Length: 227
Ligand SMILES: [Zn+2]
Ligand SMILES: [Zn+2]
Image (cartoon, rainbow, N blue to C red):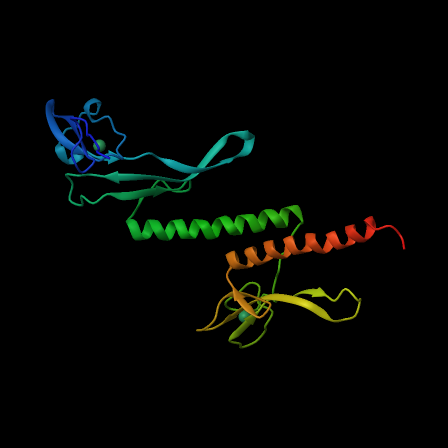
């Protein structure tokens, strides 16, 4: 497949744009992600030229039903300033400062947001009352969910037990959170395996599918003509 660039586009995917510097039309390279209309945006000095990308934010419905944004993020580059490297600029509703992130810091922010999204889902489940919040004794230095007290290196959450269906005190399966200072975890300890949150959800999905089959046994028995 051959890619034909327009006259305005170089082989690096950069376009050229005309910018008015003190009224003098000057040709500059403009990256493909830039959304600025440089021709319409005259500047007093070439150092004032900047590229910005698409701005996105996390939206939620605030008081009165209006859309509020947080974590505004966009690519930004001042190609003729002292630091010419492109950055991701991030700002929050709470402060007017823009914070510049490089590629590694942007990856870290994305990873933190994924963890934050998982936490938000867990809070939604608590709000719906579909998932009990696991709380520890509150005296652990490392983990909210830890039940240990005093000086300790091994952290365990309350046990989540599935009791034996025969009504005895026996336990079929248990699961809990575990972490060791300077070692394992934190992990979900489940059926003698140390699982990540994603692995735990996959195992739970498998168990749900299995439970449907267990219920199908009851349906099969219901459908059988009495002997
Ligand atoms: Zn540009
Ligand atoms: Zn602990």
